[in-house]
Image (cartoon, rainbow, N blue to C red):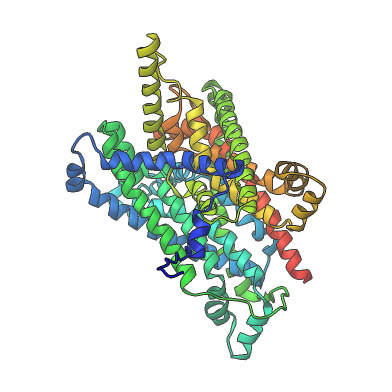
Length: 566
């Protein structure tokens, strides 16, 4: 039989994998979670593209350039400072032998427990013109006014860079030291045969091998810098985050704040892209299976005390001084703190952090297990997207949540008025539910990443064995995987809990009326030059922040011990 025939070419394999869905419960729930997590970001972008008033021209002509310049300088300054401080101390405690080495291995993480806005309040109290240091200098040298001497201005862009560097460098230190511990001794031995000394081996061999981890650490630092509000507000520095609050609250322009938030999102996107390009551009691999511990350079004479001083300085300045000042204030003014409803603020913070940590861990476990079960690229991409909230500053997410929940409340109120002549008012906006939702969206990446790391260590043979016993996916998760990854789940819950205790910009935007947490209480009192009255609350935040420091220190010590045994 003659005739023409048409041959239909099959779709490329990679396209069919993207388009083929198995709409089971895990896939549908993953899509739903990704959609909910995207609501704040989509809302901000949509509001920025459809402004209700023409304020963008005014912002572009007046303050936009200042916001861009200041934010860039702050990011670059803090990024460079944390890179130098974190990488150098990580290399010293990993490869050198000097007095106090074992203590510094975990003590260098302690400044991470201090929020940037808390250390800013403390050092401003110490270093400002009426503070104890300058007062002592004037009394000692008979200076009568500031015109008689020069002193570092703490409330400045340089002061903000210094404060953030002191508390954020542990991000780089943590990842850099982990990378150095995982490096094979053989590559350094090979560098020695080429005539490289300790410094040249570090610069030409160890540092390039650790580059991906260090790049991630610096990126996290810059994201934290973009998210900061307490420090830049207290120092009166015009960054994008401070501008968002100013335009929204002082200029009463939600669309203008959304436009600034969208520009800030471009900063975040560029930062994530640069970090990934930097890691993809050059790759370094270990080519030897000999994974022995790194050799320890025994330091002698002035060298060991110089290294001791280098490691001691960030610990003292980043943790010791703030803890000492806050502790002294707390002892002398604890009655003032109790009279200012201290326990009420503690209860509010504990309640919000507990709710958010519980939900974030549950969702994180669900997403991590769904990612393990699914091989569809789109599902995997959506899972990763739903955990991107940590890269988005709290002020941006806060605006998106306020606008989205306000629209939902007004729509429901209009519906009830029309059909039942009942006004429901604001059901979600300005409630604990709104704050909890914001916390979960922002810190979901912490719980997901920690749980996913723990789940990845469980062999897939466990899944096959569970299926042979007749267990479905949910039963396998509950009876097999959860008991095995219990440490990861607990760690994830603690990390989210502590970050929620410290979160300031999102809490200020979403909290109910006349509702204070420890973070908002400390910011309010310290901004009014009443740090002593807020010292006990600030010390409570610092104490809560020590929990993840202890966990990370124990983890790194275990890794160090394992490296020494191999």
